[in-house]
Image (cartoon, rainbow, N blue to C red; front, side):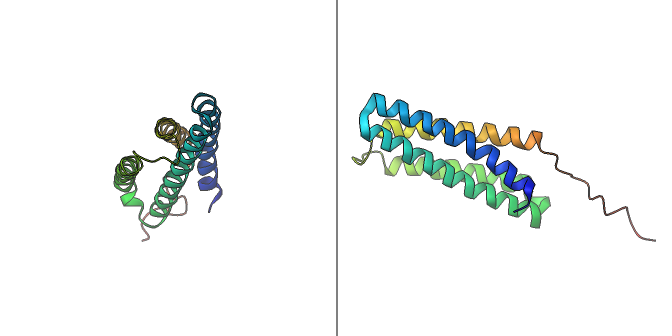
Length: 137
């Protein structure tokens, strides 16, 4: 993974993990042990789903740069749909507190997307190939 890609992934995963840690503490205080477990599961789900999506997007950017924007929009839509399906499937679970899970899922998803947007805006990514000086005569 090139350093730019790793840096972007790091700049998105760390703030999301920090929000997940805060949510775990708050959920543990408010809802007890099951709340803390729900917050941890929510954080892990977001980091896994969004991390895998980030890797897919980076591979698409390298191999099919003309599809990057469309792939990004499709990927985010698919991720949100999968997260909603995940919420629906776990709605009646007794393994952890569902409200803590859902609020942590929401908070970490918002932080991930915001951190990703910030990381891409701050990254110095060339969009012109400096090795290609034009058509050869």
